[in-house]
Image 1 (cartoon, rainbow, N blue to C red):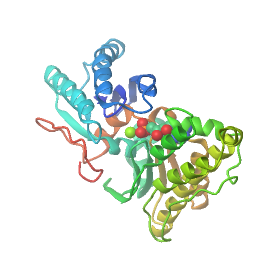
Image 2 (cartoon, helix red, strand yellow):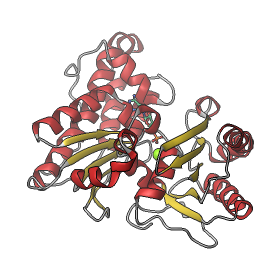
Image 3 (tube, rainbow, N blue to C red):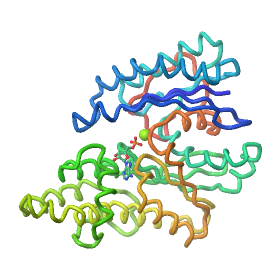
Image 4 (tube, rainbow, N blue to C red):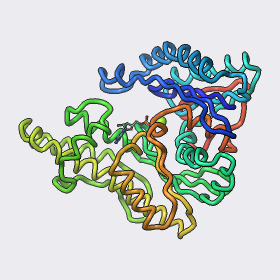
Length: 344
Ligand code: AMP
Ligand code: MG
């Protein structure tokens, strides 16, 4: 069994995963309410919250499942907020020593990559290797508060980044847009809710998609465009048009993600067998629907993370530690706050 810890940002999470049976338990303490007051994640505050939550979470895991079958401790060692990563890695090292098992550092983004395959494993743990082989090569989209990445996973389970964002991440664009609209934090789910009664074509927002063959994303122009738009309106007009503003803004994000993903599939020349969607923004209903439809059109399997594994969680860290050949135990594990996806 693998015991995993995740503390890269504002979720303290613990999970136990068995390759034979799947996830045996997941325990998570969210800090969203703490940071919402500040309009975003405050690193020192997050570290303090992790310190407060990890003891009780681990106790609960021990009580409900137990650590006697643990053969590996896995922990997110980057990318993320340095004080938060340090707490998780220190806790993992202490657990590894006391349980006499090795500790593996897991790249947080690899966790998101593999979270799309967790449902495949859950459906038939014993058949995972064979099923995964049928689903590779894979094209995946990770969309979170800090990252927007298109990557491939080849038959040897090697991850290669195809494209990322030049400026803001998709989630960041939604969070900043929501802030401009006075909706609160985190913005993605709030925009989605208000957008339901709005029209996606009411306002023309830029897609930031650049040249036709370029896979890179850019979302900062979108945010600026919303700011200019709002500045030209009275507060009463903004309030009246809020659903249309949210719907059109969300549409610009979803459209850009869909178009670049479609382009990457096309550039793959029919080689991809599956399309993945993960990260916090993968919770977004319209985005899920549009990528599912894209996968159907392109005749590839659609692998979306389950809602509980879209945001930061330890289940995906445990799973990546097992499924990804790049995640190996290390002596004296270090934190790597700026770790890129390729450099695990
Ligand atoms: P993560 O960085 O993976 O923890 O994901 C957090 C990001 O996901 C934040 O930017 C949220 O605004 C975004 N997010 C969460 N739920 C949704 C949703 N339903 N629609 C769009 N974005 C969302
Ligand atoms: Mg994340």
